[in-house]
Amino acid sequence: MENNRLKHKLYIIIFGHHTRAGRIFDIALIIAILISLTVLVLHSIEGLATEWDQTFVMLEYFFTAIFTVEYLLRLYCSPKPKAYATSFYGVVDLLSILPTYLALLFPSATFMGVIRLLRVMRIFRILKLVRYLQDSNILLRSLLMSRRKILVFFSTVAILVTIFGALIFVIEGPENGFTSIPQSIYWAIVTITTVGYGDLVPSTPLGKGLASLTMLLGYSILAVPTGIITAELNQEMKTHRNLVKCPNCSKSGHESDALHCKHCGSELATPEKRVVEVDSEDLK
Image (tube, rainbow, N blue to C red):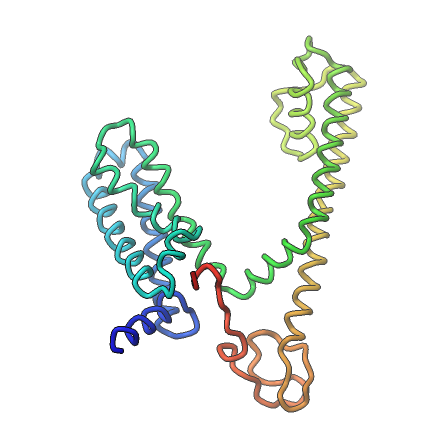
C-alpha cells in the first residue's frame, strides 16, 4: 500500500504539471537539459575541448547520472512501464543516456561521431515538456487541422518549381551552369523561396525575365501557408474559449486561465480542475 502511494506521488510529480512539485520538476529538468546541451556544444569547439576536456567529461557523467535516475523513476512509477519504454518518448529518454555508456564500452574514435549525434536527442526532452502548455497544444491542433491545405499548397509549389526549372534549363542550357533539369529545379526552389544563394545565375535576357517572375511569385506565395495556419489557429482559439463556461450564467468565451466570468463576475473553476490533460504517451 505504501509502495503504491509512493508510485502515485512520483507519477504526479514526474508526469504531471498541475502541482507545484510537478512544475518545479519540469523547470529543473529543462534547466538540466539546456545546461547539458550547452556543455555538448562547447565540447565540440576544438580550443575549449582541448583545455577543458576533463571538466566537460565530468559534467557529461554528472548529467547522464541525473537523466538515468529520471528514466528509472519514470519506469518505476509508470502504470505500464513496458509500454512507456517502447513509446517514442521512452525511446528518446533511453537514447539520451546511452551515448555516455557507449563511450565507456567503445572508446575508439570510430564510435565518437555516432555517440555525439545521439546526445543531441536530448533536445526532444524540451519538446516533450513544451507539449504540456495549452497554447502549444492549440497550435499543434491548428497545424493538424490545416495539414491537407498545406499539403495541397506544397504540391502546387512543387509543380511550379518543376515547370520553372524545366523552362530555365531550356532557356539557359548547360553552358550557363544549368547542366540538368534537377539542377535547374534546385535553382527554382532557391529562387522561389527568396533565398538566392547566387551559385546559379541566368545570363540571358529571357532567363533574367523568368528569374524575376519566379522571385515575384515567391514573395506572393510565402503568405499562403501563414494565412492557412492563422485561420485555423483563430478557429481553434474560439473553440477553446467556448469550452470554458460560467457555472452561474452559463456563458462561454473565457480565456483558459480566467478565474472570474467576464459577464457576471462569478468565480470560474480553477484551470487545474477545469482541464485535466491526459497524455497517451505518459499513460503507456
